[in-house]
Amino acid sequence: MAADRSVFILLTNTGTLFTKMIQGYTRAPYNHASISFNRELSELYSFGRKNPNNPLNGGFVKEDLKTGTFSKYPNTTCVIYELRVTDREVEKMKRVLQLFIRKDKKYLYNILGVIGIALKEPVEFSNSYFCSQFVAEILERSGIKLWNKLPALVTPDDFRQSERLDLIYEGKLSEYDPDPLTNPQ
Image (cartoon, rainbow, N blue to C red; front, side):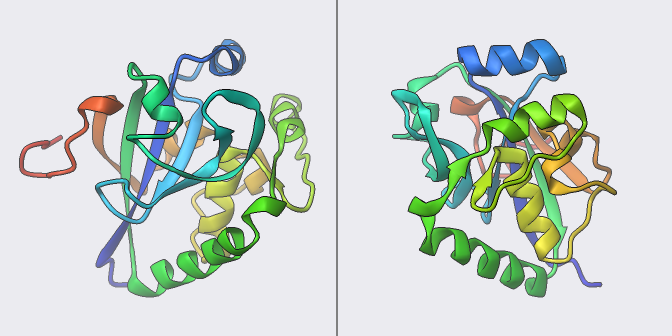
């Protein structure tokens, strides 16, 4: 398998009340996962707040580092991983992603799924995901299986533990420089 392309997994901690509640249980440093198709993170997708000012309205989102939720929390910390994939795997991921984009209003945030992780029981509803479940689903539907578990049981910390992912940055999200020459790890 020729690995000639990459996708990027962004894990973040905004420091919000919801993040602190999850962190109280998981003890993990990052509790939100997103996927990007470029190092600049300009094509960044996840399940989270649809409106930065309303934590109760969640669903499928195209995240924006400059104007979205992350801009509201300038002290957001993060870790960014690179996953080397083939052109064919990227094509598959983008096809799966298009299904979400075409029906973006139809998707809800799977808060019960987050509780299911705590109980070690997958809670799945059609058209309902939480962030790491969504990223794992995109990968799995594209033939990339990083773990031997259902996407509904994948946590952001599972990405940190994957040996297939290469760390490219850790620190404040606002200080991330996508240029690999100025930001070597």
